[in-house]
Image (tube, rainbow, N blue to C red; front, side, top):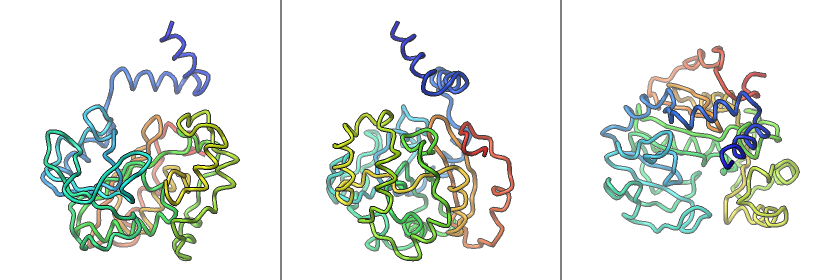
Length: 288
């Protein structure tokens, strides 16, 4: 009866086709097509994760790369977040079978204590949406990457999250936020969020009043999704900061993956193919 009840809930929320895809994915636990590319990038390299540790990179996640990393440091914006408690120093334990990494306490848009060209790769899973000025953050992350280093970026797709009722953010809006140097205490999107955030898909947020109270205190907790992404917007954002896109994948039920290279020989139109290609995506708004 429990299985039937779960299937019925999936059908009500997602429809027949997507319910089938969810069940198929859970049954076979297939890794995304881009997993082989990601795994090859992180082998024998020194990496930095923004946020984390992330369940998605563990042995039970869809990108189980922690087990293949030799050295991984981390940066979180505070000692205490809604997700973890950490302290500066050699305390970052992302896998019990791997070396302890260095834990930085730094905001994602300002990481000047980390020298430029320090890391072979960077990981970020469902972090950028919590940053009010994502392009500023991406430029900072690019600075930290070595020449020909890689950014492995996972974003939540609006269709698969509690953001599904919100309109997608435009690249023009993201560029404007960058040009006026929007700060992390910005609450420009709060009215929209309070109106369109689907609390039925975000049970951890509590009641509407609890969610509103938490949102008004966002500078301390960084829980808000300032911006709402589709796969096309992710492509445009990475192209804007002039990184070479290696692969893009829309992954059910809620992920956008972009792997990009800090190519010292970057040239305009290098990512042209990703703008023209037909997306194969399970998300309706990618196909409109």
